[in-house]
Amino acid sequence: MPLKSTLHPLGARLAVTLLSGLLPVLLGLVILYMQAERVLRHSAQHTSEEATRQFELMLDNTAQAARELLPLAGQSCLDVTLALREQVTRRPFVRSTNLLWDDTIYCSSLFGDYHEKMPSGDYADGHLSLMNGNPVTPDTALLVYRISDGKRGAMSTLDGYHLSNLLRLIGRQKLLLLQVGPNWLAADGSFHQGEPPELPVAENRQTSARYPFSVRAGFPEGEVWRYMISEYPPLFSLLLFFGVISGLIGHAIQKRSSSPTLEMQRALDAGEFVPYFQPVVQALSKKCTGVEVLMRWNHPKEGLVRADLFIPFAEHGGLIVPMTRSIMQQTARLLGPRSASFDEPFHIGINITADHCQDFVLVEDCRQFLEAFAPGSIHLVLELTERKLIEPTAITHQLFEQLHDLGVMIAIDDFGTGHSSLGYLRQFNVDFVKIDQSFVAMIGIDTLSSHILDSIIELAVKLDLAMIAEGVETREQSDYLTAHHVNYLQGYLFGRPMPATDFINALSDH
Image 1 (spheres, rainbow, N blue to C red):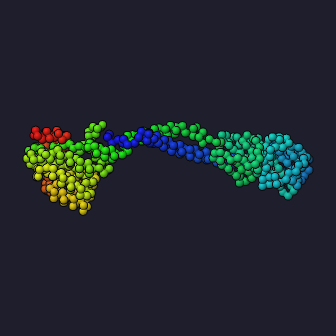
Image 2 (image 1 turned 30 degrees about the vertical axis):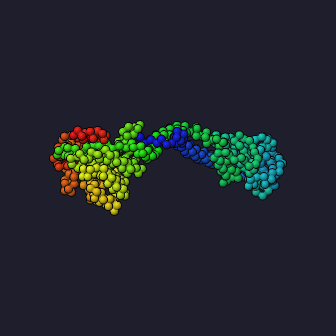
Image 3 (image 1 turned 120 degrees about the horizontal axis):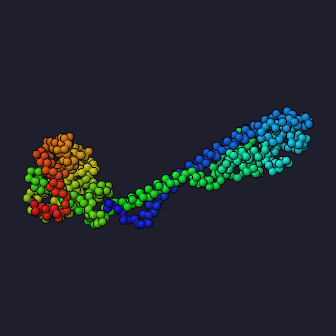
């Protein structure tokens, strides 16, 4: 394809290709990272909620032991020791029970008579305290629940082993800790004082609504990437695939051209757009009485390029008008000197689009074209194409009037297939209709298409319009069209589009 940009250096094209490939990969990684973070946050929240619920169940059992013992506070330790030990035996997780009088432990399930001052201010909300241990197990944390009624008080303790075991079982690969007041317990059972550190990833804090403790859950540094590597390998492969495809697409687009208009402007300046001529014959005599001028791109590397591959780009880039002017000037130089030998006015058809109808420059182009020929030796026919709709404005009406005053004729190209063919007939002063080759090809094959063709011919006759049939390839088609009074024929049966030299030689031989 000739529409290739040669303006971008290799480094820039490589950078664009790499960026095209990396962009979907990076965007995908960001989305996966955000998704992994969301999953980890949800997991941390679920873990902290579940740990809170389990600790509350354990404390329910521990608190119940203290509540049942509270009425015994004040009685002789000898009388209530059995009751204290019974609560330890009956209730899981309870390690020991104690009775207090006036903030002093006086009876313990472990030691019997005991004396230790235990201020209530050391307890969170006066009820809960996390301790590093006691004289029996000085290195094992304890969670103590305390209840008071005046000077009476009862305490039950929960073994730290059960606490840390619960943290390990629920937390597993997470960071999970229990905080009571200023103290906190890690999953490895270690006791710490002071505010716990912030957890690096997806930290979630859950505070119990029933007891004065909180649970923090989160993940260690880098857990998001570890989770992605563990859970998303197929998606990584898919991202790489999309990255490669995107990079190849970006590379292909650059190769095709990031600026076809600039490439065509270069070709126009280099004179690479040349006219090709296809004969038009009189239907009855089969004598060559005209020609349609077709544009071709003689590309230095790609060779000859058909018009349908570059004309849409030319129209989009605003180059169709100067390109058409170049073709008209070349045609005038080639055929003008031979026009004196024409036996009768020679039909020369040139395509124009809506871009030619924006101003009156076309009038001057046609005047200069006609001046290159002997007076009265040619009929210049402008064929209206429908790639862009020609609006019936005051300018277009005045333009066509001035063209007719010059003797220029107007034809509707590919009549019967466009969405505005009938509109052009109604809005503009038209001299010719060119019957589209799709109807001609169906002669003798498709009855419906033949009926449409007959209707087109009948309409042209009623409107007193001359007719040119395109795409005539068989003798049967030629005979059918001639019998139905079509004026001119054009197609491979009479000649293919050919370079100017070949056409002039053929015209001389004929």
